[in-house]
Image 1: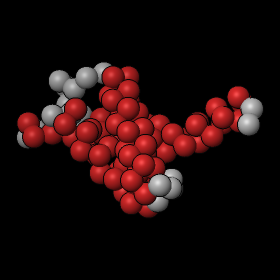
Image 2 (image 1 turned 60 degrees about the horizontal axis):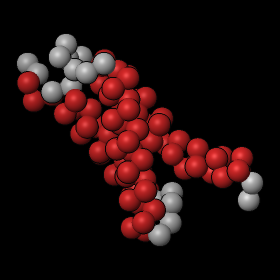
Image 3 (image 1 turned 90 degrees about the horizontal axis):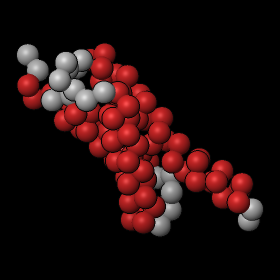
Amino acid sequence: MSFALILSHLLYFFLPAFAMAGVCVICGAWLLGSASAPPWKTRWAWHCVAGALVLIGGLVWFDNDGKMATYGALVLVSATLEWVLQRGWQQR
């Protein structure tokens, strides 16, 4: 397998985490919009790391990637992380 093909596989493996990070940062700012929240780049980085860990955990747990349970966990972790980063418990 060539180096470019390895990079391509890794990119497509982590792409759901990167896309979910962008969606959560945009929707979190729109829905919660906390003034004391970290900048969007910091939140995006946190989401990318958490999402990557969820995808790796799903790969290890199920011994297969692309399971719907892993994607469900990705959504749950991303939404919870955005709520924590936006300090959702202090809203209203």
